[in-house]
Image (tube, rainbow, N blue to C red; front, side, top):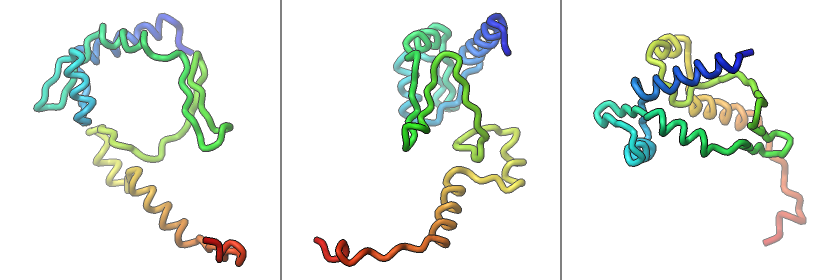
Length: 140
């Protein structure tokens, strides 16, 4: 487990990275919002440098509890306090890691769209629809 001091060191390093190095923002609307709110932007590189005060202000305004709703209530994920969830990642949705992408592709890497297509093909290949009962079939 991390000590409070370790957490603070990681937080401060993150703030410094966001402020000095920045992040690449490819979503036009998000880029524009950062620009309007006072972040330093480089339009040619889609680079956004976020001031420490802006990050801390966003943290202060963040809700203390967030619910990620599942199709059924038992699958809801409640994010609050020290609650932790772990899962493995099976695809890279628009993740930009230039040092790993070539290896990932060489190993047969697939994005979310490709995986969803494969799943749909498998479902359609094995799905056998049931006949509609006569009393329902003739209702309009």
